[in-house]
Each structure stands twice: as C-alpha cells, then as structure tokens.
Amino acid sequence: MPAEAYQTYLLTVLTAQLLASRLAWLQKQLADTTAEKRFYLAFSAAPRFASKPPLHLTAKQLIAANQLRAGSNPAAWTADQAACTLLLLQAPHQTPAEYVTRLDQLFSTADLSELAALYAALPLLPYPEAPVRRAAEGVRTTMTSVFDAIALRNPYPHDYLPEEAWNQLVLKAAFNARPLLQIYGLDERRNAPLARMLVDYAHERWAAGRNFPF
Image 1: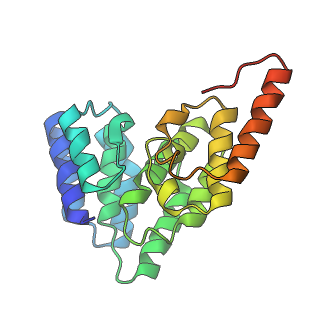
Image 2 (image 1 turned 180 degrees about the vertical axis):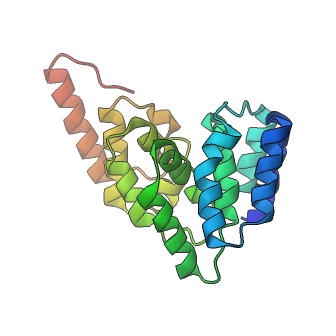
C-alpha cells in the first residue's frame, strides 16, 4: 500500500471535518516532522489540537479506505486518531530500525487514547512485520478501548499475528463480549485449536446458565 495514498485519504477526510484552526495546526506539523523532538511533540499534542469527534465517514469513504489497504475500516476512528496516523506515516527515519525505535518510544510513553491510535494504525505503517510483539501485547491488555483498537475492524492481527496470539485474541473477544463479527478475517483464520477453545468456553458458560456471546 502506498503510504502517500492513505495520507491523502486521511487528510481529505480531516479537511472536510476539522475546524480551520485545527486543520492549520495539523498541516503545519505535517510540513515539518523531520526533527525527532518535533515529531514526538506533535504526536502527543494531536489529541488536544485535533480533538476527538468521530470521523463520520460515508459508505463511499469506507470503501475507498478498504481499496487503499485491504481490510482497512476506520469507521470507529476519531479525528485525533486520524491525525496521529498521519504523523506516524511521516515519522522521521533513515532505516527500518530507526522507525521501529520511534514506534517503540511512542508505545512506551503513550496514554490510553494514543495507544488506541497506535494499534489501529499498525496495518498502515511501514515495516509491518516489526511490531508483531507489540500487537500481541495489545491482545493481552485489560483496557477495552485498546483491545478493541487491535482486535476489531483491524486487518493487522489477521495478516501478521501467529496462531497462538490470534487464538488468544478471538477467545478474549468472546470472553469480554466484544462483537466477533468485527474481527477481520475470522473465518479465514479458523483453526482446530481455536475451535476447541471456543467449544470449551461455550460449554463452561452453558453449564453456568449463561449464553455464549456472539
């Protein structure tokens, strides 16, 4: 996926929805992300300057997102998530190792909303194989908004997580009554160990007089 195409897509969406002053701030940051310190400052300030209204994407815009990156579905994104993703796509680096270092630093210092933005952006970022460990950490989180960002409407787990982590994601989604139909590629990555885990879990719930959450 050409990063420039998705950047153009997100900027077009934000241009139509952000106040002029907020859009001007974002464009200024995007015009100068070459300095490492400025990049980190812009990323941490994005939630405050872009604010957090939902993007209100049209059906046509959602189709366009999926065409740019198979499985991409920013239907639940907020404006600050889109702004953070734009900045991530322009993070200053000379090598893949440098980019991963930038990403690790952001994950290490991120607050709740920033973590959600980071996990939601994973399938769009360069060097997608590198943050697999981070994605697996997201599966284990107890924070619902962060778990949803990696587990729901996100093609990254389907494309890159190893089977054990994938199965843990699906089982945890079921355990926490998250909408399984929003897990991208669920049918494609079905496997025998996962089926056994889900059957065992369903029987446990039935034995306790509770329904299985679909």
